[in-house]
Amino acid sequence: MQYQAKTAAMDVANWFLNKCWQEGEGIPQCDQLKLYKLVYYAHAWYLAFTGTALFDEDVEAWPHGPVVRDLYIEFKRFGRKPINRLGQRLHVDQDKQARMMALVPQYDGAMEQILNSVWDTYKEYTGIQLSNSTHDKGEPWDIVSRHYSLHMKPKIPNEIIEQVFRNKLNAPSS
Image (cartoon, rainbow, N blue to C red; front, side):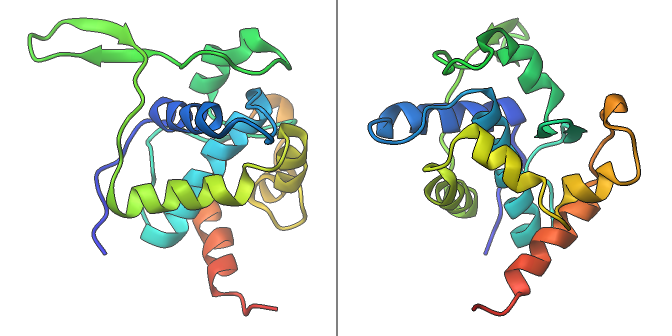
């Protein structure tokens, strides 16, 4: 299977926000916690399936679970309320003009399959439920939190994320 080039964490977040708004009825809305964890799970499963990172931004171990700092900076004003707008990031057009834009990317192939699978698996959960699941024993957040102070918001190495999630892929079904 061929995998396309990396994307940005903000683009993945916007993809999930768009999905949430499209399918919103009957599922918990996307607040900060839910969005951060959806992006994290997409990155983790992408690493497990492909051996490459979905995006270049670091995933950090924060007290409420894995977070990409750029997403926090963009969406922190929403607090515990549902996010009601796309995130913006700097884009440079063909004329080398830079501007802040909010885009919902169109993915295809394996990336689209993985994002849809993550959405279908986790959409029914609240942000708090997803945050709690990242704290389970043996999860990457748990491994890093046992070795570093979370006040420092240490990076969760992609190698740890990939290994934990690849082990889940290879685990026998019960």
